[in-house]
Amino acid sequence: MQSSQKLQVLRPDPDSATPLYLQLSHKLAAAIQAGFWRPEEPLPSERNFCDLLGVSRVTARKALDLLYEQGLILRRQGAGTFITPKLEQPLSRLTNLSEMLKQRGFTPGSKWLSREVVLASAEEADSLNLAPNSRVSRLLRVRTANDVVMAVEETALPYQLVPDPGLIGDSLYEFLSVQRLAVVRALQHIAAINADERLAALVDLPVGAAMLHLTRVGYRENGQALELTHSYFRSDYYDFVVELRR
Amino acid sequence: MQSSQKLQVLRPDPDSATPLYLQLSHKLAAAIQAGFWRPEEPLPSERNFCDLLGVSRVTARKALDLLYEQGLILRRQGAGTFITPKLEQPLSRLTNLSEMLKQRGFTPGSKWLSREVVLASAEEADSLNLAPNSRVSRLLRVRTANDVVMAVEETALPYQLVPDPGLIGDSLYEFLSVQRLAVVRALQHIAAINADERLAALVDLPVGAAMLHLTRVGYRENGQALELTHSYFRSDYYDFVVELRR
DNA sequence: AAGTGGTCTAGACCACGAA
DNA sequence: TCGTGGTCTAGACCACTTA
Image 1 (cartoon, rainbow over the protein chains, first blue to last red):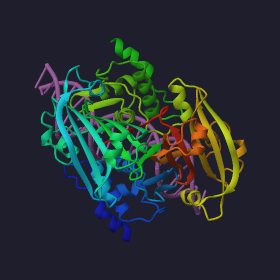
Image 2 (image 1 turned 135 degrees about the horizontal axis):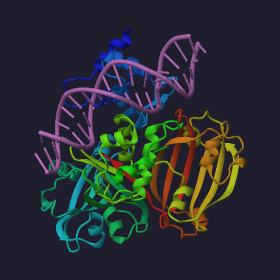
Image 3 (image 1 turned 180 degrees about the vertical axis):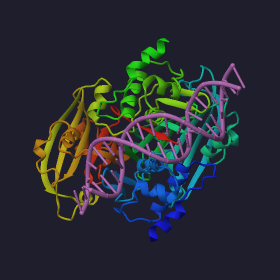
């Protein structure tokens, strides 16, 4: 069969450091995105995958589980596994704004308004689980897309973990990753507000314009709160997409 | 040991129709919420769970996987499994507003403004994947919490699937479930808008007040688009919480 | 009746963390 | 060194869809 030949490129490498199910999931996701199968078309059955790729069924299923969670495939018991009809590309995943803008064809930019070490506000101390009178590194910046200001962002980080905010470059998340301080989980509150005079001036909108106010607390792998960010977005330039399940 | 005695209440019933790993996951989630373990306290090891509860390690892990996805536990290789420090209760899960309000101690209400069958708008036909000139059942209602209007909601459903919108009671999602039309996945866009005169009147806010505008397309298990809803929320009464990962 | 996805088991090896 | 979570296997039974 022709298709079983093609499938061989999906075969994971048992000697690789990354787990088989992850390799397989990545390869499958890429193949689907590349149009390897047409929408509505059935994938090979799980048992076929096992035979053709030399992995156990549990491993194949674990790879497919990931694709299912990403909304790339549908599974119908007794019938088979199918490519999701319309390929959408939602994101309830943690991703940095710069990457998202690039993917949509915009040129992202960022300009620091201030980077300073200050006493934590009550909200910051509470959210970051700091003792009263602790210090935080507080960052204020405007973010642009094609040179249009689309958001104002204020971030607080524990001084103990980030003592010199002046070292942070254009990408906060990249800086944190390099420092072994990656954020792996975040809780985000989304509200709508009317722009006050300060905000309106910064984003070039009339006072009272509706803006999205995102409040995000970011957590490290060990559960420690690392970041409190308030973002104020122009809603005409950006709308937030969430995928909901079950 | 005392703790191993307590654990017996978590033992899943092999004769039940619901899978062992789901039973176990539910029981564990309930136990955690009830304060069975303190935050930061380690859970029994996976192998202990297997011995004490009479399930295989794969099954125990699958139950723990679900808890991890819900942010209830943290896993540290070589160390153990721990309760998440602060017990937050986020939800990027598909849940109906009524339930959420009840959980927060509000009394939810809903009042239909209209339920009619009309020609689909261009947006509705596109989102629901309908042929031009198809009909939809269109619903308009206001939703209240403790008798205060907090949102206006307009929903369109394919006429073919829901021919008599007059039959829908207070809970749309319950109605759909009973009709075997459950929504299992949804894409939601969130934007901020200034209330126009019509909206302002309905929610009792001044014209121009910032409101959250949610646009949701709901999908069935088979991937078919079932529901297009525009919701307009008073942001002072409700803010949307999202959990982000990775 | 045959094939599919959904669940479950017992046992194995690995990498990592703590004592 | 020992116990932990992370990965992987081969094989089994079930419920379901399709023909």
